[in-house]
Length: 299
Image 1 (tube, rainbow, N blue to C red):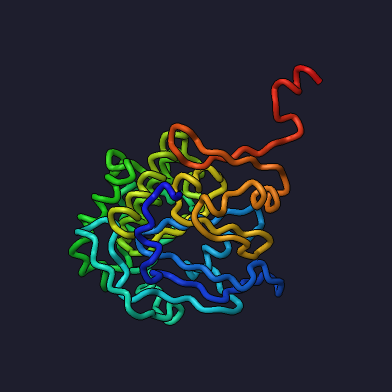
Image 2 (cartoon, rainbow, N blue to C red):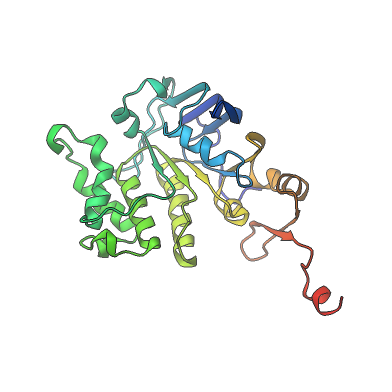
């Protein structure tokens, strides 16, 4: 049984990719992918390096162009991550996401990418305010909710006390949280995260994943996240999508997808799966040639 109530799994998709193939230099690296992100649901994309998971996520964010396929948004999404109460789910039709202007698309979909730069001469608050750009008119006007959204994003990510500090003075983990705050300030109904725990120490990894869970549960945000850590995916996600060599080979609740046979086949190494008695979540263990202390001490 999934550790999280599947509140978002039956709602109409907030973001849907259908028949998406993506190519580099004329060679397909993602093949005919169908992926749906639903309100209140965390969907984790997992797979070995080079499996296409980050490429697919970037295509959902319109940062990468698909060779074939469609991308659509459920009308009436945008439940909002930072301001006000969650809005009712009124999706009864779809919008062609590729036909929207960049500004209109950015009001509905935010993405935390890997390897964002460290801007110089800007404070933490300056960077978080970048997330309000889609909501502003000419000359930065017309954003009545901007200050509230920025303050809440700073607070949610635990960087409010750093608001006046220059971002070039931050550690990698602190900067990662600042960029996440900028995404939250964008106040969208869809949030895409590409390996968001990169650079974070253990405490902030746990706190960030807790925050992602709360955004889905409390504000019905549709979350798509790429993770390398299988145990994090098992603990966080309502649904898991497994990619291998550019193809989606499995999708479903963690208990249905994280099986020893499937994981071992995809990663090419023996992977055992059991249940953590403390948390009730699935946990995995990759078994190498020297996997037990007894064997090392007594060959």
